[in-house]
Length: 571
Image (cartoon, rainbow, N blue to C red; front, side, top):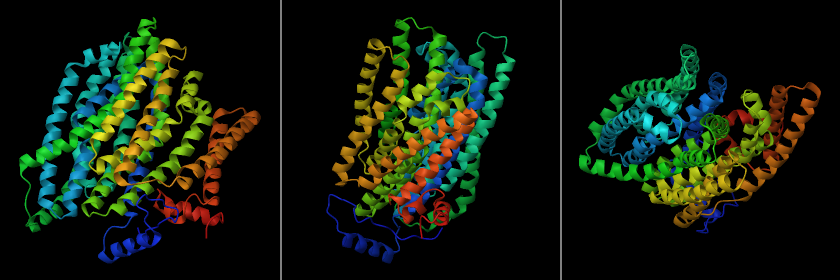
């Protein structure tokens, strides 16, 4: 991909009162020294973002037949088991890609290749130990963990997911190795292949297990167990892919280590720094990701006291899982950008290039908002039709849940990217504190809504919006404080929101107008989405909310520019 000029918007309001001249001088200095350009991390982030979107779309597609196979009760059990698995994964290895990439990026930028390889080996030892212990724990105590949710049948999928924790721990270190070299392509390739295998195995195994145990009263539990088999086989596929790429790359790494005459980090110190890097990320993610688990646990206990039976509650969890699955698709970009921005900002800080840090924060937030805002508005406007199109077996409640929680997309995107920024500037404890504060507020709100209102399962959707909203506000204040940074608002938030409102209004009218004539939800929905995307793209360029250079940095940006030129929107 050709190098692109770093761009600076005239309206860029930094608290340090940097002038346009200072920006230009800074960039000339970087070009003269042959150092990284501002867009480099966006290119890598865009690769990972494109892969993440593909992965989540595959996840959305395969969950449609799987949901129809499992039914709402089986889908609810799958959701419960996956929540517990996610927490176990966070406690053991979820933080490894970010932590390893951050530590290795700092060493690679200083050409300390032997120390970087030592970090990789120590992280691998940690992954094998922590992942193995957690896998054994979850397998042995699956029944007890399932009982905590009042859903004993969730033990079946939990036991299938247990060995997956060990596999994903090793996978995380391998991904961190490549991300620490600012190479997101191996992670992107492995993610896509992992999800393809996951999709095929999940659907086939869910169908097979349901058929095999059709006479059992625990048929939903067996079906959910089949659905989780794909996660295990997908992770194994990704490990084999990355191991192959690592072995191909190993002779080059060995040569660099041989040429490195510098100091090699002591093993004890590496483990100490690794743990000090991993633990805050673990704590942050435990609190951040546990909000959903805490919500479901509280909802289970509170509805028990109100006399709700297990099958009804599990069916409602199944409806809620459709909503979380749908909103997770656009969040692939924020997750990918956070993976890209952390080692990139770390590298800029090692060079003491504080201006570049701010520019990277600006670009990543703007790119996220250009996607998250229209997605939130689109999901809100077409919630019912989209759910009916994707999951025809569910009822109207799922559409209402989705509409209530649609704007969580914006707040999760902001909270994810700002948490990564804080972690990259060594303020590791702040995302933990902010998530903990938000989770307490959210838990109190959920208790009030369930006990004092008739909202029921809708309470979960409301709380799912409140949690990231509080986190992103607190994160934003901290980023502003520690980086002396202020985000440009007009083109990042206001224009995309106004354009999205127009887009949403047109999509609403297009859907109902089309449905009036042909009475097909699927065709009407797809037509409305197509028109909405086209309207948003045209208006975004017309109001100059995005420049040609910014568009080029986005996934498939070159193709979008070609389309814009054909439509005479750009020259």
